[in-house]
Image 1 (cartoon, chains in turn orange, red, cyan, brown):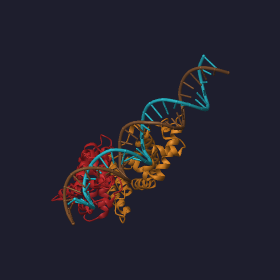
Image 2: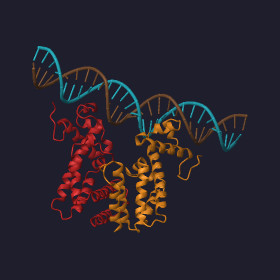
Image 3: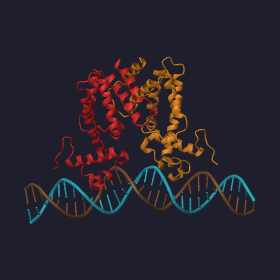
Image 4: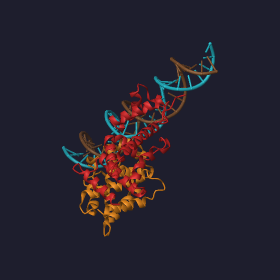
Length: 178
Length: 178
DNA sequence: TCTCTAGGGTAACAGCGTTAGCCACACTAG
DNA sequence: CTAGTGTGGCTAACGCTGTTACCCTAGAGA
């Protein structure tokens, strides 16, 4: 009987997720193939299926980890902050720019919530809802703004000369007046 | 010598792009394979390469078309509108919900601008910049908000019970006070 | 009539996720 | 001590992907 870590994953499965994480961050999503992940561990791709149900499950594990890290970053950011919304915004952008491939993986597509570690999505969301004073609509609008700024920046959609810091401030001050 | 349409594409290339468009909208991105596009025209995949340099070029053509359509939608929306920002927001969300796969294709990844029809991106962007009174930072922040709301909705990231209309209004009113 | 080109075709390659089936080792029960 | 069972590797293979090399035919122009 394989012992399972707090994430609900087997020890070996965690090693696989770790290898995948390294590959993703170092070489981007195209490098995230079952064969390459296996290669990093010195085994062959089919062996991965002894530990994980498939690539979707592997990605879901990466995403779960991402949510936990994002939650920690958020919780640290609001701790004792006088401007929680601003602090969250900085933390959010920072997280995404430091782990662009993981951020894209986390937000690109519909979430397979059934494959996610339970509670991680909610935990990452909570600090923002609290910073919005419990106003769900404000929280959602602010999240949409932050995600939009972030993913458009990651995708190189703003002109290179654009002052993104100014655009962030513009949006944030708008929301703060709400 | 193959005659070329205004898009810069050969007549036959345009037929291919049309077939691809149908496939994308009817069956989603997974159906957008060179073999299936070719099959829709009664030919084989390698023959596509007589007309288009590859799949990236095909996608770029789809994206170019998408920008033109979005520009037309925007231009119609602001025509005589008393609240241009609000009109653009409605038009934006509407466009994306009516063509979700195309919208995702247009925004998902870094743009291959070298493969795009010239000027289409700028044309689609202009109405918003004008609605923002020429304030580029405001325009960028508003675009980020709109894209964020849209893509998060398309990706099913808001709770099913969320009142997205209210979140849109929340964000819009914030930006309007700027 | 000869030649060139446009636009089809087939075969094939490398890489993808995944499945089937085999095998060796370690642990546990009798 | 032995038999049985489960764990975790392996190879081979399937169907799919984008793409390339190469062949052939029909029509146009000189």
